[in-house]
Length: 375
View 1 (cartoon, rainbow, N blue to C red):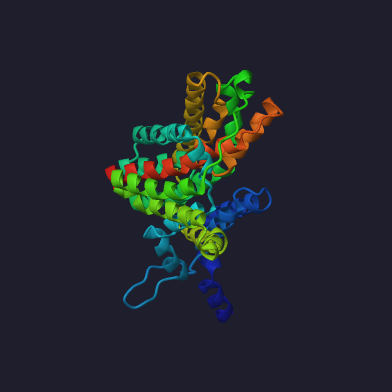
View 2: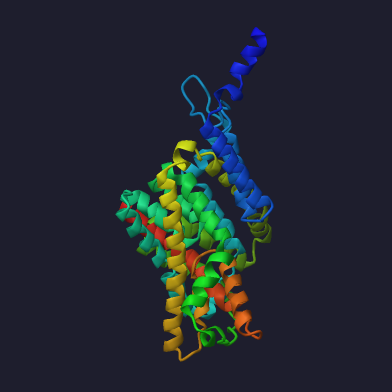
């Protein structure tokens, strides 16, 4: 009996608390949503499993390294997140998977991507009013960009103690794009506006596609050096894709490296989901502010689309402004779906991809601005 009792006292069961149980249940709920419902499974599965692992007592997976004892496995993997390495690598892979052609063909849509970032600063001001520090408020606001890697990157720099909460909120709202955006689009546009058919985009030459990432890198980083890690990696990936000289590297970036970094990033973000952080009033505030940020970004994008519609005398469908958030390509698909509902002959997908990729650039620039002032 002493042996059996000793085994029990040395097991995780003896150290299990009600907070651990709650966190394990939350992790299982997220796994259910990712596996059964298909909500952002590529990232939500590793995040949820990271939550599961770190909330099983006395595993030591996130133990810090000391002079006498080595750190846990997830502690070492987390250093890539903590040092801001994984998010830029995700941007490198994203750039290799993104076509900037629609943005180059219609550069006016850059304004739509910029307008959609206003939601970031709306949530930032709201967070300040609720008592968060400037660094915490900046990290919360970036959820409005609907760009998970950017949210993770900025949070690790400004408010690492909120990393798990902000990452979960950011990816949850990205997964809910098809649910959140349509009501906002319908509220802010008329049936006539939603029926507008846009002219086919011009063909973009290979030379233009090669020059674009180079010029963008030079101009943006000279203007905002703090955005260099994200913008630099995004544009390098895109240049690798468009130059056509290194197809094997591009294939690796689009597939193998993207999935490897994604699972490690998700696992280590989930491993920061301690019960004391998630089970708090601050978490509820962050979830609400994140929703406000995302909804505001969508709304400002649509309103800018309405303004451009007036200025162009009805040549721009205001709905494409909703794609200004950088949830690529889900936001563009939502616009396409709503366009077909209003007018079955409507094809807005490529038009919406312009502001969609502009939103990726815009969110990285917004993160650079916040890092410049509060980092």
